[in-house]
Length: 248
Image 1 (cartoon, rainbow, N blue to C red):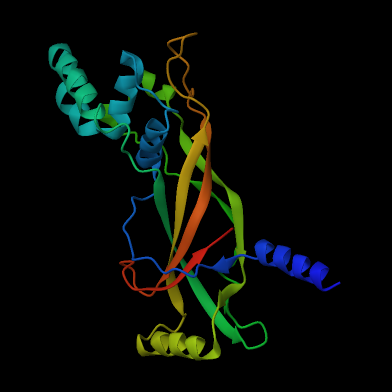
Image 2: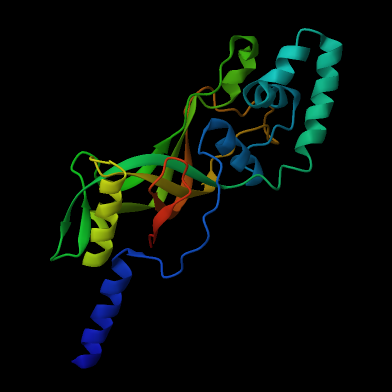
């Protein structure tokens, strides 16, 4: 019977998300936006600007300043294409696949029974797993017909949705946090959150052995990911972290 109870306790422990025991240094991450997701897909081999049309489309959304200065002159544009290939070559395998989503959250009251400093009903954290990027960059000078080879937006979906009623803190820790809110005049008990997301997979975009035009055709493009961690900060510069959480 004791062995059975130990097994049940073990699986309950695995099922419940908990804060990480380690508290790694605060790092900076690029924002989860259109261009950075596109770069992550290049790193994973899920987008390959390997022909002229896809290279031009990539250049127009990611390097509009180059397009603006060169596109109207076909000779300069050919030179710019070659320069873009040379720029991409050493970077394609090094683009970051971990990106950050910045948000805000408000706290309400501390629950002494559950030991959670609860989030406000106005900013719940329930089944968080979907992040939509900004629209594909569309500066007028860089809006060309072959841009529709790329998605209109990326929808990043993590495989480990997170639901948290609040942060699990001791009463002393909760009192300290509330005191810091009060000292800063933060009457709404507002904190800053960063979701750190690992891009892992997506359908392929780019020329293939079957066709040179296997693009997204301007669709919303779903991207697979995993929630790596969630960080809570007291400042809008995301420097002063007071809680680090790792979901299972």
